[in-house]
Length: 158
Image 1 (cartoon, rainbow, N blue to C red):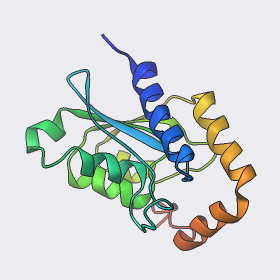
Image 2: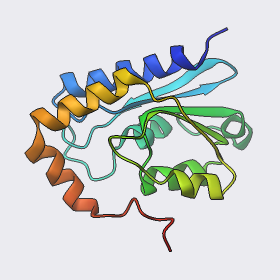
Image 3: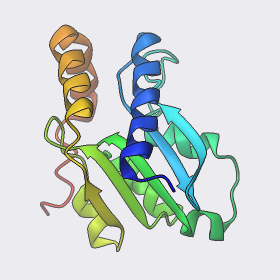
């Protein structure tokens, strides 16, 4: 049986794929019954996209699952999900999200929790180092992405 470390390492593989493609190193996997059913990574830069975050890419790559499949799934992501990705998690009723780390960027975890999603943060050092290195080496690119969303991660401070 695989554990959280295994699946977050698989999400890290996706993050590294994004980086190798010239993108932002964030990755995710969707797991059902202990098996990966979908993978994805951030494709904002590669696809000149405004929505292809790792979590959205992963949900899209899963195809049209039925309601029960989503209810039995766990989403693993290397970085805390933003409000858009958290909305997709809620829309598809994914009951549990396991996050590699949330110290480099805090997403909308409170939105998930307020809507009954179990959120687990692993504080994975490799996730943190990979993302910090990207931000350090690509400040203009990262600041450009951040400027598009402003301070929208404070969705629970209302």
